[in-house]
Length: 483
Image (cartoon, rainbow, N blue to C red; front, side, top):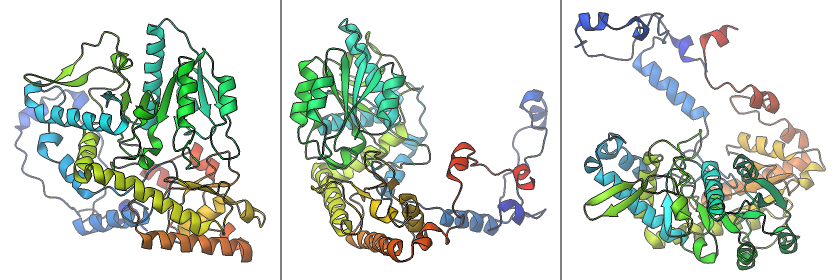
């Protein structure tokens, strides 16, 4: 496919600009530092060339509107288009965060009501939407824990992180000034309670739990884990990456969690991927609320307002009030579904995951046989005996028109394939994916070279993974093209 620069021919154009209505003398009075000296160097193409070029590029890309995204631990569900329509309403899209509060009452009301919904969902009383990603929510939650213990005159240094936790937990712990210590899983893939008891003491600030864990398994001894944390004065933190399995089924705050982060860009159907935008809001129990970032959206006698009067607050952790556009989409999603609809989300996600698991357990090794929640983990160990790695299986899926699942994570499963179908995939969609996975398993036994040489049908063949990670180039320039 030719680049748009290669399609360029002098004199062609795809635009019609209005006549300049700024006086020439005003333009000439601009200081030199604001004037462009060099050419824009834009391609010169017709409108139809421009449209076909960008449409062609979009077809080369894989996206959620094209097919299933079975990424384990990253809930990549379909994003209803009504979310985009409401977020584009001028009353939301054209306001400014520095406007007088009397002019943004609708936006504040939306944030307040969305917060009330999230508190109801999680079973905790207070919320901040300032964090703008899952990892940002993690580090903010740990900053709250630090402030909470400092206020009590305690200097706790340790965060306990199960080996089945979300991958960013150890990094967030370190960046927050804590020391992460791993807790192993038992033979059932759940937290090793004996080891947790042994490592939990008065120097441990937080147990960070991903539940369901990254094996897709619900921590059945959750009540015991909460008691272990609280009996030593510690806090129990829920990484909300897998909240898609719990909606309407359990309220984390009622189950013993003290801090819960929410991934609006996963669980609540705002677009996920491409670096953002996201939402990593936090709900917390009552005695942690005084430390939340400022401002908080409150409701008073004269309307909604921003409360900066939190003397113990950790301060700001993001400009203004968070990613407001993302909040509008999450609010739309919740209003469209209602409480019964939210519960169906989790029920369908669980059914879909178990349908895939049971359909593929004879073709790939299944380390943990018990029922899964919204995701599950297979192993490519049997295929590896024929020289076919999990990476090869993932690349072959691209040839068959599917995005690959998460691979080599969690690390506690050898040759891991971590699969989450989400609730938005139909049985027909799941069956197509099952057929592809079964075909690859057969090819790995009968013709392993075919799998090892994949992909062959994609615009770009297999990349040097290390070089691609270290020398990522996402912007085209003519200079690079000439080199």
